[in-house]
Amino acid sequence: MTWLRCLMLGALLALPVQPAVAQDNPGPLRIEITEGVIEPLPIAIPTFIAETPAAEEWAQRLTQVVADDLTGTGLFRRIPQDAFISPVTEFTPQVDYANWKAINAQGLIMGAVSVSDDGRLTVKFRLHDVFAESELGQGLQLGGSTNSWRRLAHKVADQVYSRITGEDPYFDSRVVFVSERGPKNDRRKRLAVMDYDGANVQFLTDSDAIVLNPRFSPTGDRVLYTSYETGFPRIYEINVGTVSRTPLPIPGEDMTFAPRYAPDGRTVVFSLTQNGNSDIYRLQPGGSPERLTSAPSIETAPSYSPDGNRIVFESDRSGTQQLYVMPASGGEPQRISFGPGRYGTPVWSPRGDLIAFTKQNEGRFHIGVMRTDGSEERLLTASFLDEGPTWSPNGRVIMFTRETAGASGESALYSVDISGRNLKRVSTDGAASDPAWSPLLD
Amino acid sequence: MHFPRLAVTLTLVLGVAACSNATRFGPGAEGQGAGMGPGAGMAGNAAATGTADPSSPAYFQNTVGDRVLFAVDQSTLSDGARTTLSEQARWLTSNPEYTAVIEGHADEQGTREYNLALGARRASAAEDYLISQGVASSRLRTVTYGKERPLEVCSSEACYSKNRRAVTVIAAGGTPTS
Image 1 (tube, rainbow over the protein chains, first blue to last red):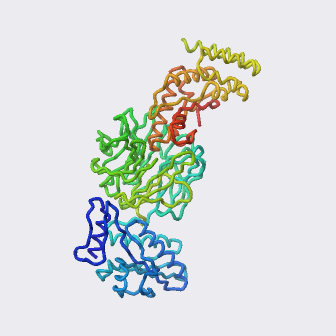
Image 2 (tube, rainbow over the protein chains, first blue to last red):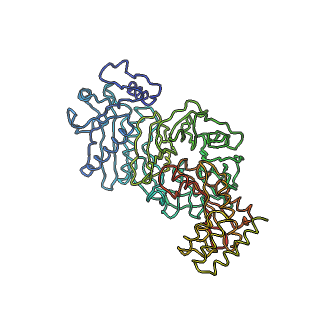
């Protein structure tokens, strides 16, 4: 267990680049790190065994989603099944490790699926560290309805990911986003939620009003967003399950936008505009809006630290957009961004260690991360227009909006590892923007 | 004093024009052009497209000029913008039955939230100027669209410069709504 896990941790923390070669294992195992590019770890994922006749199709589908989750991280490479020396026909704890070593499978995932007469799926799996010739963690059994088969697969993949990397899981999660249709000068926008991998899309609003910047509650059951349904931007909260929505109880008719929940899931921080001046306000349950900033400059895009004690936000009080941190009840902000260019849309990592942001410099947009004091800034992406980062529940991956230039320009969702590796487009049906990742589901 | 007097003159000229046919309105508009800035030159077009009624929102949009443009990341009004807004104020003063919503917009070079705030600043700059020219604040309301509603869709300054705008949208009476 230990070397596999250490190697993968090394791979994840790829920035201080060190050739991670297992010292006690000079065999074929090797993860090559070259300028931050890591050779994915080869793993074998034989199609899960169907233990009941009706489980055949479920076994195929579950195996595929588990494999897609793991290879989608860029940390794993799935060995083609036709390379296997002997077919896997039984779900047993006994493994002929030599056969898997021979094809250089570092990890082996064995699984089995059964489905009961009343439509209940059960999936069992074991993870093997081939070169250590032992199981990595205990075998595990998960159950659920066939409707939730994807979640079962994500949970299996989460277990494998966590055991090998030592990181918290994130596959069993959802993303709320803005689904876009129509040309650039007549864009139709709808709120939608989907699984983190783009499956199971569900629309939450119709396209009559512009909707922007949805944000999940810390419990994942509600979403804050900005809507123009009255003709003016105002903040609403929608229950994801019932799709019932209510305006955030802010008196008056001032424009409000850029909402985000505090970690308590009840307090909301947002921007409110009066006489053209946008400042940051806080609304606690049953209270009135409290003004947290008072400057003639633009203050917006607030985001709480995970402990709820501080708020990072953007302000152009210095003349250009920069990032500032202030106490959660207001008070003197400290500027944390000092590099060239402009910084916006800061988002505190769920681990509390980093702040992700959008940066504009020399006509390009970047997604980047920095420590919470502004040090160790690293840019992860570059394009015509990247913006609006959101963190995976484990703080390892960032999803954001990338928009292409010109009359046919379109928005899409992308994700990137915080090492800067594994940049890829997230599959959505049509154009999409403003992603916000949910917490890990229960 | 200067602006109110001009407003009265404008009302008289337009009043005559409103009673005339479209072809006779043309020369009247040229007369305005000499003393009253841009927008008047479009009167011929406006007449041709049936927006000659000088108290109509269409006239405001096409002839008075319903929008002002801004420099990159700025919300200060240029001299040209002030001229246009002065004309807007005169029209609004002369047509008290109307209210207006001023829309602030940004180009696509910016983050969504910042552009919302920037659009609000621009709309507010235009609103403040209209109020300074005598339009009752109760007749005006602002809204920001940030970068959500570009007019032009190319990704170069030729389009961006037209998208960085504040547009005064005329509505009939009552509380300004979008």
